Length: 162
Image 1 (cartoon, rainbow, N blue to C red):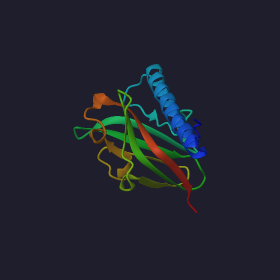
Image 2: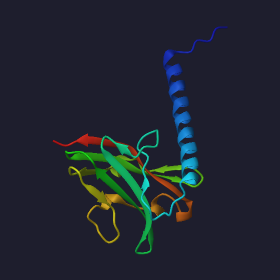
Image 3: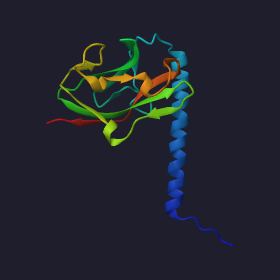
């Protein structure tokens, strides 16, 4: 009896395995980097935009901080456009919990976008509704702040604006 595996199923199997391998590497990286760089949650921490853990992509730097605003735990996001031209960025909010579960909101209506002027910094701030897309309620992703581990901008994409 001969078994024939189609090229399509082989590619699917390999791609599926690679996906799990990269998620495993990301989980290990997040676990070790947070222990090595324990910080006060009020400090700005990098949002990992690259598989290597970098928080700058095509001239746009991304960071987050966990804080409290009007009694609610919130995640503030900060973007710095180091480019000499404006750019449009798009992303979905996502959070890693302490037990390394990925919680994301990736429905079409959940996509966030923002146009960053050249050489500018924008960030979410309590009481200022200038950039509402830069404030995320922790409870939208985890039941309690103690369950929160790290914020991520899932499917982060940068588009030049003419």
